[in-house]
Each structure stands twice: as C-alpha cells, then as structure tokens.
Length: 124
Length: 409
Image 1 (cartoon, rainbow over the protein chains, first blue to last red):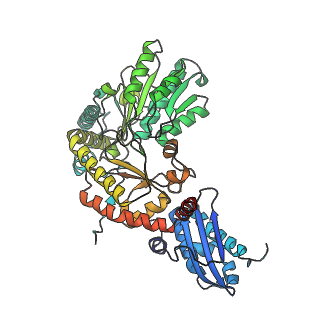
Image 2 (spheres, rainbow over the protein chains, first blue to last red):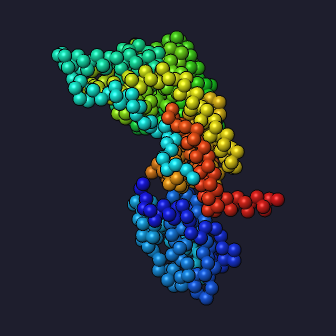
C-alpha cells in the first residue's frame, strides 16, 4: 500500500463527515487543476471552533486530508487554527507523496477561506 | 464476516500466470537455455520451442506461423505495426507530410502516443470519435479515407469499456479502397484486450496487422506478438540481427515465448469455458450492482462488448477515492480517474463517449478472469454498496445536487 495506516484509517473512518447544521463559517474550495473539492463548515463560539464538518470529492488524499484537518480543528482557537500549515496536514495523514501534496494545500485553502468568511481572519 | 483473501478484478490490466504456463516455461530458464540462432543441439532445442509457440499463437488467431512476429509486448507490437507501415510508405515514396493515418479517439494509450509522435513528425492523423456507446462509426472511416491514407488503426476491443469495434466492416472498406487502385493501404487492429475473450480470426476480420500481448492471457509480462499478413511492407524498428524474418532483431525471449505459446493454446482450448464463466460472473455482478446501488452510469454498449468487463461510473464520487477504498477492503479494480493515472485529464475514452467530467472521473473498470468465483463476486456485492454510500455521504457534489433537486420541486 502506498499510504500509511493513519491515512487508511482516515479514509475508512472519516472524522466529522458531514455539514454542521448551524455553522457560522463555511467554505467550499475546488482545485482548479484536478477538480477536487473540499467543503468545510465550522461553528465558532467565542473565538473557538466548537464544531466542524467536512465534505470532500476527489482522490483518496483529498478525502483523508479533509478528515485529518477536521480532527486538527476540533476545539481549536481560531488564532491557532490560522497557524495550521499544509505541512501539519500532511503529517497528520502520515505523509503524502509529492504529487499528492495538493490535497493538503486544498484543505488549508478551505480552512483559510472559511475563517476569512467568518470575518475572523486577519486582513491579508 | 468475510475471508481476508484479496479479490482481483483487474484482468484487463494483467492476469496471473497460469501454473501450466509456468511449468512449460521453466525448463527454458534452466537446462534448455540455448540461443535459437545457434546451430548446435542447445540452439535447435530452443528454436523448436519457439517454432512450436509460434504455431500456437498463430492458431489462436487463425494465422500462419510465418505471419507471427514476437515482440516484447503489445506496445512494441503497436509500434512495429504503425511506425513500421508508415516508415515503409514514407521511405519508398517521399516525405511524411504527404501521408495520412486514420485512428480513433478511444485507442489504447500506446497507439495514441505513437500517432501523436507521427503527427509531430509531420504526418496527418485523423482521430475518429466514438458514438456515445463507445463504438466507432463505419461512415466516419469511409469519410476519412484519402488517397494519401496508408494506414487505418482501429482497436478490436477497447481496454477501458470493452466495446467491440467494427473491424470486419472497416476491413471490407479498406479492401474495397485497395481494389480501386489504392494499393498501399493497410488495416491494423490492436487485439490485446480481445484475444482469448472473443473469437479473433484474422481471415474473418480481414485485418493486415494485429497486436497481441501475452500477459493478458495468463502468461508473464514482457512478450507480445504482431500478426503481419504476407505482403505487408514493414520497416523494422529493431535492427542488428536476422531474427523474426528480419522484422525484429534481437535474441528471442525464449522462456516468455514458450509461455505465450502455451497460454495461447490453453486460451484456445478453454475458450468457451472461460468466456461463459466470465460472462456469468460479470452479469451476476452487474445485476447485483444495479439492484443495490442507484445513480449509476454504465459506460459502453451493453451488448457489443467483451464478456469479462464492466465499466460503471458511480455518480457524485471520484474513481480514485473509490479505488483506494475498495483496495482497503481487498478488492482490486481500476479507474479512468485522472488522480489515479498521474495525468490531469480524466479518461479520454470515457470523455470520448460525451460524458461530463464528473462521470468520467467516477468510472471504475471491473474485469473478471477465469479464476474468479461467484463467492468473490458476492463479496464485492456486499462491500461495494457500503463503500459507495460512505463516499457519497462525504461528497459535496451529492449535497449540491440534492439542493438543486429540492429547489426544482
């Protein structure tokens, strides 16, 4: 198998799959090159991510990264969430081959986009 | 719940080597190691084995033994056929730019690649589309024929969706054109997927060149063959030796050739039994999938196709994600998804059917083999609906579609 057991576990048992009903920060990002999609919905209460949900369409790394990101976000302060990088997501799925790094990039993009739409991201 | 053994449903990619084939080839790796070009006993023993294999491969497709050229595989056979014919035509009468090749948009990547290269070198290439069922129209071939056309290359059966192309009708057209004085026009067909699965007889088909691969027939990788009808002029692509009647230089890969010969003989002897078995499994599988899973698109004509193959797009999910999820459940399949192939474009074959991006990306090929069992099919029928449902739960496309449907009500 090309992927780690952590990766496979995310694929078989995706964490936080679905949409948060009363989300106040939502974003759906598409990789313009391959068409993979990640939809992230967050309920942020007093600067902290209380609930997170993700939906994903694409190759296995996109699905696994969505799940891993959602797990990383559980209970995190928005300020901390903004510090997350692609590298952290890659590590959270137990590594990715170089040509699949874009899956982690899409996850971070969806996160930043959701947080900025909630009005809590710093102006860039 | 289920046995942990792996279920292999990717026989169009490659097949396991039959034990009988292994037994036949092994002595040619050890004591019968001679070079067929050697005059002594060892050489003649190897020569006799290669000749036997040549007769067996010829018999599989109803050809004469001296019309078979052994190659390193299907890709090399396609190269020798297409480049060989084109270079022979160009060499005997002027520059490449004056010549024309007709092929299709649904050929195997090797044929597509060869034609792309010819085009870069100044050849005119016509790539015929397929209809939405994955079959090339004979009228399109007729319309594409020009006085400059030297080769028509149309596969016998497609490798992704298994559709059987009207090669016989195209051959009649080619013969008719030839009879009108267009003497240097040949028909090549890539029969790598078809051989052993549907009857393939070069006289019935009427083709001039036909490619075969051993490893799709339960023999090892690394051996293939090209049928070259007597009288067809071919520029060798490998030079530096007299092997294969000057058409392909290099010491013959004796063990692989012996294996191919044995596999071809078994494929012929067991033809009905294998085809019936695979068709029964495939039909059981498709009936089960249709019953248990909604939002499916079957790709390719349901009648005019190989008996062992099923290509299905599962709406709202992506093929590579499904492939890996099935692999985690010990089920091996393949997909037309771009993510899987390492390219950025989804399967050109499925796209050629006029399918949108989402359907192209969600296509999965299940290809059955002689050693698959009903029990294995039933295991897949148990696992697949669960995996598809899980991925659909995860899919934002499904959600978007549902919202659109609700808005329309």
